[in-house]
Amino acid sequence: MPYADGWRFLGHFASADFPRDIFMPDNGHFEVIPNIVRVIELHLFDADQSLQVWIGIILFLASLYIGWRCIRGAASPERRAAAILAMVLGFCWLGNARTLAHANESVHAYAVLFFLCSGIGFLARQSGPVGMRNASMAAVCGFCAAISFGSGIAVFSGFLVIAIARQAPARSITVLLFSATASYLLIRSAGAGAAPELDPLRQLDLALRWLSAPWLHAAGPVVDPAISNRLASPIARGALIPVAERWEAAMGPAALARWPYVAISAIGISILATVTYRSIRRGGDGSARLLGLGMSWFALSVGMMVATVRTAYFDVHPDQLMAPRYLVWSSLFWSGLAITLVAGTQWPRRALLTSIVAAVTLLPSQFWTSQLAGDIRVVAGQTATAAAVGVIEPDLLTGETVAGELARALPPLRRLGVAVFAWPETGMLARVASQSVHDLAVADINVEPVANLLGPPGRRVRFIMSDPGAHRVLLIDDDGVVRGLAAPDAMRGAGAWIGWMRGQPATSRVRVSVLRPSVR
Image 1 (tube, rainbow, N blue to C red):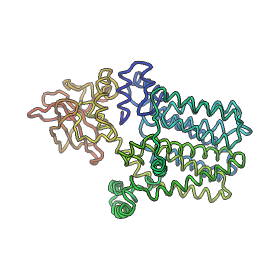
Image 2: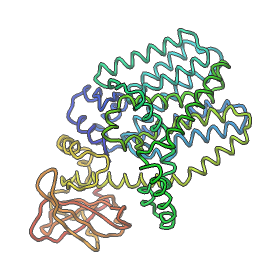
Image 3: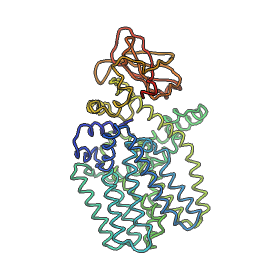
């Protein structure tokens, strides 16, 4: 189901003609390649998000495969195992759930990751000088990354570091520089990108804090009372809430604190600068170390870009600097740094043990970050259900979905009968329920009138029900007309459901029904 920016994209795609739909700049990004996938999905798959999900999975797995091919040349089994584990942690850590579990995000993020890894592979895997053919292929990968997402152009920094470390001839470096310049000019001419705002000290502080965000989210409940309070285990909540409150009292709110995050990033950058210098002096390292260098320089460049072009935004929304949506990039810095260090270490067994300890240490964070992903899914499902009915109450928790963008997207989507309007349950709205539905037994049903941002007032319906074997159910008035839909409300507990209905009749008993399997 669509969520957040996905609604805005769909509203544009459903309203614009080809090729204006594909070449639409959005919020400074020029996402041509992801937009091709999205437009095809809109017209062939009713915007059900499935094509984006599968393309995202394919790009993600392809990135892992290319990374593995770079790492397999490491000198010993222990180094290879440690480097692979570091890569998997960087790619698969559930701190990245905002991207891993979101179709609209995954298709552009993993397109950039795929082109980053592909370009590094062309530059790093083959022995000998970097020839024109490999440099040209990396340049093409960089261009494709740049037209996949705003941060994509930063892949050129990683490519250039690798080319310099491998003592590439001037003509090969020129090819990369030409592609980077052409990509930037194309993005700017299309109306995307943003002019940098120069405030060096402020932006250095922002970049350092942005880069350390994975440490904040990995520590989660230990440093942020809001996360501690959401833990499912009462024992964990009782133990960690006091710790998080003391940390917050000492360091400030987690999303706004400067220390120790600035120091952590400064140490990481110092290590990266050192290993990069040594690699250049040696005339290049193996492909595994170069993979890590390319990843880290890319992520560092993204952080500098974000801090430079979003300075004013972070002045207004300072809590967004370390938002989960950025973790897919910042985690690559630390993953790449770890790959570089373990692939070239003189103590391979210690490196492998350290990687295992890091993985085990991160294991608890998988639980609270997966819980956050589950909460986002619930919010997305409820927002989509309310949108399908046409009743968005002002206090509805919509997460990162902007109500105004959602409202503008719904009319063209309804006209095309796609997204939520392609659901068979939506097709039953305003129709008399027939033999195609089956009534369900519910408990504790509660109906309340609510205001509606989209039109006339409606009703909110809450109830308890055992699993009906469907993601959505129908809400039917006394007159037998289907006037609403409901979705699970897992954040309120097992068996809880919430739905919305059109209109506010003086008296009406609400029936809850489900479409028979043959109709879904």
